[in-house]
Length: 213
Image (cartoon, rainbow, N blue to C red; front, side, top):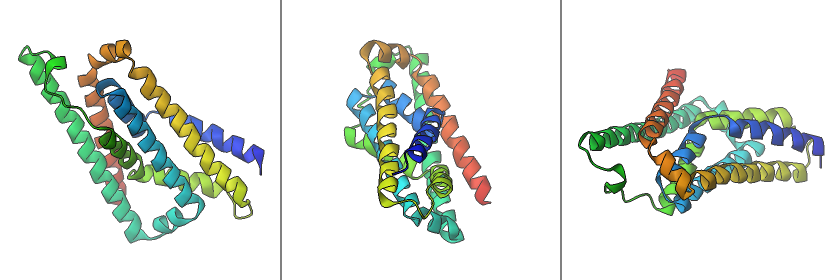
């Protein structure tokens, strides 16, 4: 097992996790507007997607998909469609909240049923799994650092590190922001959070589609 290689992978992945993106935006949105269990479920969903990306990359499946123009374009379009749909939903949520405020209604008293744990998990899973940029990131990372001569144990440890770091980071965010006092304060900014999340998701979707075209 190559310890230096694993440490390098851990550092690179930690930096990537801390960088703002769809995953981070989704967990912030979930933690500030949904139950703690749902927020944690979304964090677990994202982490499972990262696990799948890691497995597909380390086994060469993702590289095969990227090598096929037709398959990779299909993956990009599906991913862009999902991110765009999520973005539109977030912006619609913002508009709805602003309308409620304009009608002098308390946002906390609106009929928000909330997402179930399963829905939170699936949103986290799909947001990362269907993001072509995540696939490209893991293909690039593993292609550069996990060469064919690396043994199976090191590869397994690399995948495990990706999963554990992802779980720690996103669950930490979910736990901190879903604390009652913090959630109450952050919830007041939920229209802005939804708007920023929506714009981010739609922007990434547009970038993906423009790359295909």
